[in-house]
Every structure is written in structure tokens, then in C-alpha cells.
Length: 209
Image (cartoon, rainbow, N blue to C red; front, side, top):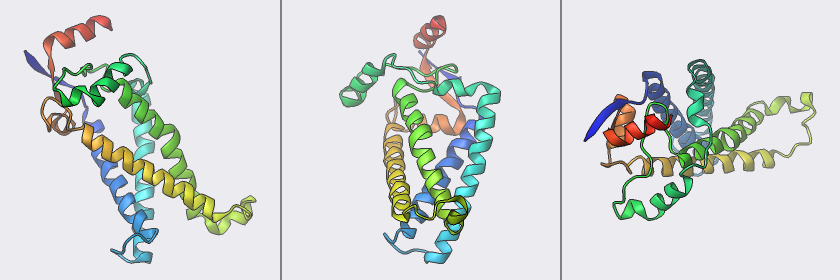
């Protein structure tokens, strides 16, 4: 019989939705900066993009502090346990109504593939976006730091490539958010903090830990 457990703390939910809003803002404004479409005008959209970027930097700094002081950083430690089962589930099982091979608990909130995906964001996509973005932002002072010969095109390609990877991650993330026992179950959990799990699954997970 399913029961509800409190999985996502208040700050986690605030961080998740604030980060999502800022990333979407950065994608929308960033693609306009690159000339894909026109909504606000170049000068205005650059300002919006810069404000959103610095706001996200501040949010990430606070989130890093929170994760390390609460021990929640352990939720993102990568593991390959049940990774093959998750791949099979996402490739086939999700379309055949197969049982989900992973159940959330307060100690294990993310399945193995989620952990690997978040690690890729933290170690590859995020740093590429931030370093290339800062190079863009401080282009005028490149000569002072010996970067006068750095091709701006390289920075542009790195920044845009990371942005597209972030967009792909966002699309997949939204799609998989609908892969709960109902299409809105995981979304509701990230709003309320409460996730429905089966009693026996929760007990087995707690026994293993």
C-alpha cells in the first residue's frame, strides 16, 4: 500500500524551481543574443541575460553552501548500482508499464542515471557555460590577463554548445518528470515535498542502508 514520505525539503524545492526559471530565462535571452529571433532588442536582452546569469551564480553559491552544510551533497554521488535496470526501464519498461526499478527514500532521492546526469551538468555543462560566459562578459579586459590572442569564436562556440546541451538536459528532465506512477506525481512531489512510495520498497531500502 502506498504511503507518502517527505523527500524534498523547502530549500530544495525553492532552489529547483528558481534554478529552472533562471535557466529558461538564460536560454530564451541567450538565443536572442545569438540572433536566432528578436523579442526584446539586443541591448535590452543582453542586460536581462547578464542579470539572470549573476542571479543564478548567487543561487548556486548558496545552494552549494546548503548542500555541504546539510550533507545533501551525498545525494549526487554517482553510482552504477541498478544503472542497467534504469536504462532498460527508460528504453522499454516505461512504455510497457513495467515496475520502476528504483524507489525514492529520504536517503536516496535520485536514481543512478539521474546522479550521472547531474554530475555531467555539474562537471561539464555548468563550468563550460560559466567560464565562457565570464570571458564574454569581461571581453574588454582580456589583454590585461594575456588573453588578447584568444579567438572570440572559440568562446562563442563553447558557450553556445553548452547552452544547447543544457537545453537537451532540460527537455529530457521535463519528459522524465512525467514518468512517475502518474504523469504529475514527480512534479507534485517537487512542489509539496511529498512523494508516494510503496511500503515494502521503502522498508527494503531502509534495511539496506
